[in-house]
Image 1 (cartoon, rainbow, N blue to C red):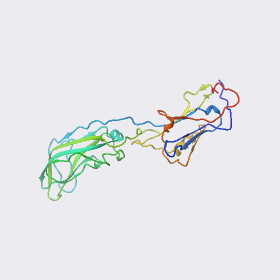
Image 2: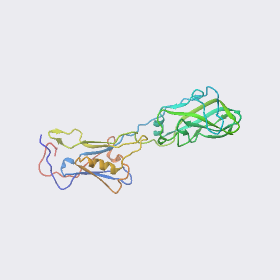
Image 3: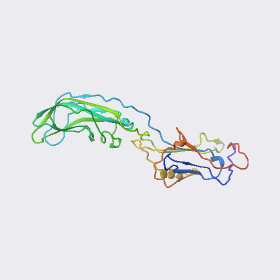
Image 4: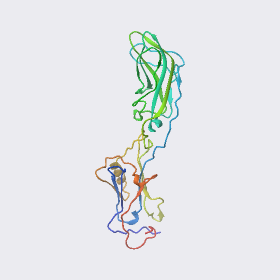
Length: 299
């Protein structure tokens, strides 16, 4: 099989791509030569979407033995043996799927010199969960009702990892006059859908795969195309701009040059919805074949 002939007509094949928004298109891929072998050559900008997810239910925790706060002005909480901590094993997945936590805690507070100054659900090592804190003074049987919030304990970017450990924490209303004893504690946690899910699967790597058009010597290239997989961070956010994509492609010297359109190279690169799922490939076109027929190209 002979190498492909190069039929030139003064026009190189190209394709324009973008994110389907107001700035579309934002990047152009143009063949470096004018051969019609580039007609129909696919350029793919893809990233794996996050599949639908419903979080697992979270088990209720019940206090096993009494706990007395540490005297003074700081916060203290029952140990895991006194009131077992809650462990959430799909925390990040639930946050990415658009869910947030609700909290309800019940307990009895008995004065050992003071009352409860405040109570909250705390992410161990991360801080109190926003929306879970209730102010005192609190004595006797207490029911927080269903609470919820945003921020820490609700946000992937807080640095959360699976499993996520949550515990109760208390302060003294009067740090000078003593402590307060907590008994009969119960903590209920539940996921509720409150926002749109993240679009993209987290922790994807940026990758360029090159399969040249036509033949390499006498060997036909299977599934030819330029396949670009976009990277994401641990929260499913896209990382590469169109300029960065263009620079990475051009640095490889593949026979295709990427250029930025409309000054929108700082936009985050996304799959072009007009290129259709699942691979989001659009074909280069525009070169005109003249002269003879080369069976190896099918022209």
